[in-house]
Length: 259
Length: 259
DNA sequence: CAGTGGTCTAGACCACACC
DNA sequence: GTGTGGTCTAGACCACTGT
Image 1 (cartoon, chains in turn green, orange, red, purple):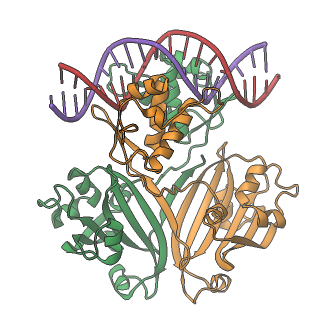
Image 2 (cartoon, chains in turn cyan, blue, purple, orange):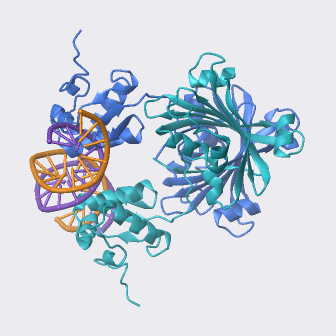
Image 3 (tube, each protein chain N blue to C red):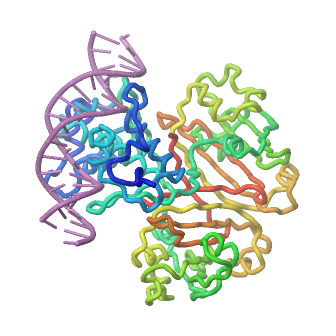
């Protein structure tokens, strides 16, 4: 069996670039390499050729090749050491926590998510929410209360507060129907708000009697709590949320890379 | 008062580069800009000059200037839009979760952390630990059990498992004294292991009777649980840990950036 | 249209690791 | 030494935005 892939000068077996595509060259290369690593075509521990050689193999300049490699380093797929070289890292299941909604998480996991909107409207913000939103106490805000279920079992109790100053959110965008069919974040984005960052605090406590009933958990069961403050491009707070999850059936997964 | 900082052509008021320094130019620029943003010298919403102009102001090439800007984008401090320009973003308290130990977290928070080593030695790995470490059931592994306190109150019960195959970890590096004075991660690193990535799972449940006693919590109190699997450069599992925190006094904080 | 950031090239010199 | 990745330059062309 030929050493056709691992040998020097054969990167083109793994990666082909299409210069007529609108997709940037560095990204084409990065994606192809990422896939090759994940399917095992480039096994862990393999030492790659130096970047000048690789660039030459693909007919690219060194900076372009280099940019593709930097992407792989960010993804944790390769390790580079000056004076040594570039090595493939053992790939793992990667689920970096991002600014996505629980709905998306469940959807991709095939857990048949569904949402019941318990209430939706404009109401005075509770003290904590008003403070996080940077509003005066009891300022009226959009308030959505939802119950998220997976496989027809209630999983999470979601309360979201949004300032009424958001553009294009008072014109019938925030409706019960829309909330049930898509996630809240997709609605916010389609309303012209550019989500930028979020702070989250994860804690735990015992379920209140209300939560026991809503989540169908035993009395005094442990629940996971998530508080999220989300910001848009301009640094304005566009959302404050408090979520409560049935701890017996939900956990948060993070992937971290060393700096 | 002159518009000396915000006006075009005056970036040099905020940033000075030292070409004789070993610190890369792009990093000098990035750091100076980051600090200027954080202290408010470059206020949120301010539109920066285009990158060619900025590069010219500092006597740098466009790619170098550009690299500094990319760093700031990663940090979430600026927003760039093609055809529009670059805008300063409102800075916030940023505590991105990284691959650090709880000890470091507490230390910087000034919470007077202390550690009691409850047990330390080599013992057969429990099934879960053996599986995560990729070892046969009941393989002997380094096992450390610690009780972490803050302000003299027990806060977390930490159990760590490390394979005995780690280099330089059997020669007296892993001692009770060392564990008490430094964090485990610092010990691992000083043993020549290059930590690379970790997967974490955060959950919650009610405290067991043992945990109630150790953490001095009420019976059946909620606890936060953290499972961590850590990997080195080569993708080998170098640690599996299960931590239990008193939920009444500890929470996890995350900062997320939109992609 | 003019102006912006995004991409790409073809070189150069340097710091570091290993032999 | 020799070879590696890290940094830097001085251009170029393109895609997108707002007027």
